[in-house]
Length: 316
Image (cartoon, rainbow, N blue to C red):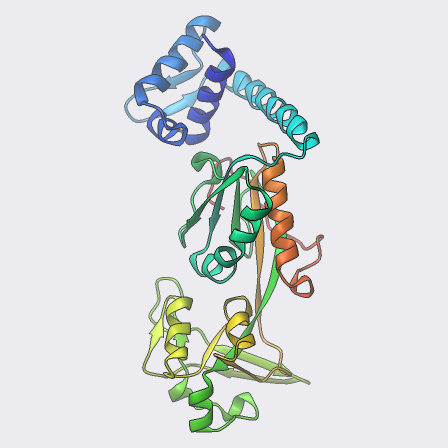
């Protein structure tokens, strides 16, 4: 029996809380996972997992063994990565999860340059607006927005985005340039729907003690930033979105930013990694690449507070 491999299988079963999900994440058959854990228990002479058709839980011996295995596997990965790093090698597969709009706006255009820097590395990017459990899914690094409510995850500030009002040049020429937010026609403003809601979120502006809030009343509202931007490019109305999604379009002249002297709200993007894992050189290289790619002036300070709440395998 390959004890190191058996430990890896056992740890994945615990992390996934499922034999079948562990098998899927390891890309092996369910029967292989089951027999591997059974052989490990026979070798140790004790039951590590108490299981029936509905539940799976660690025994006292299993809990102690899981903690030791996790630390041992971390040390093995660290030792292997240290050798590769000394040789200047960034290799293997990097699994990344990101919100779809962020990935399309920033990650997808930037990844070819990252891949070019590390020819021995492959990147698997999953675009989703429904984050998965990083540990159970085997994800190396994810992009998250705002607070990270899981004490098993480590969050690092990546980008401080702020909202911008913008419009297509054609619509601006046809309707005239508003000098301040109060000049906006709410009937031409397209809204972003909140999760599980059909009412668009309000737009907020402030400057020198003057605060303005506007509720979009245009004919089109979406729960997708991508769809909202496409509508604006088609001259359908004004939009209010995070700058990270439209910076390139504004720079290219496809959209025009309005009211740059006014303050708006914002949201923080973080890179998130599992706390239980050694951060491999490939993961560190990716995070550093993203920091260098993004506008440094938009990044929050490293000491920015992050809300963490207990919970072994909650969603990030």
